[in-house]
Image 1 (cartoon, rainbow, N blue to C red):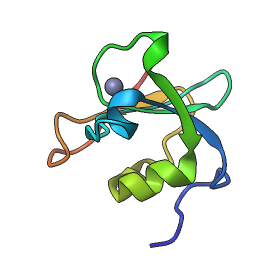
Image 2: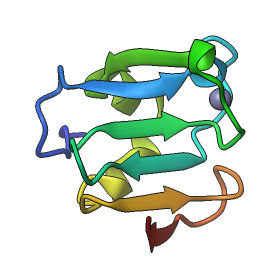
Image 3: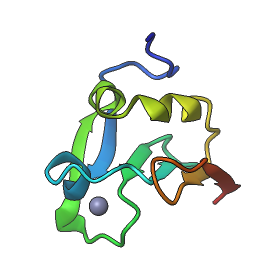
Image 4: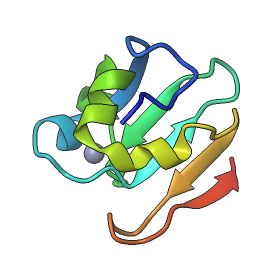
Length: 92
Ligand SMILES: [Zn+2]
């Protein structure tokens, strides 16, 4: 599968300890308006100590289903209830 994002594969993105260390599914994706930062989170509430910085390529290799969100505009977020359900996209 080709890398689907416009951003470079080595772009730094925010994820959480649950996704990278506990292998929880990615259920919340945000593409921030102000700085274009991507966030790929497990969907729970977080404090700062649970934030992790990884590359966009790393996240893509972890879960190819985020390819669907490669064109998510700035200022939008996507959520799903589980990896089997559809992404619901909304403006933040
Ligand atoms: Zn988490």
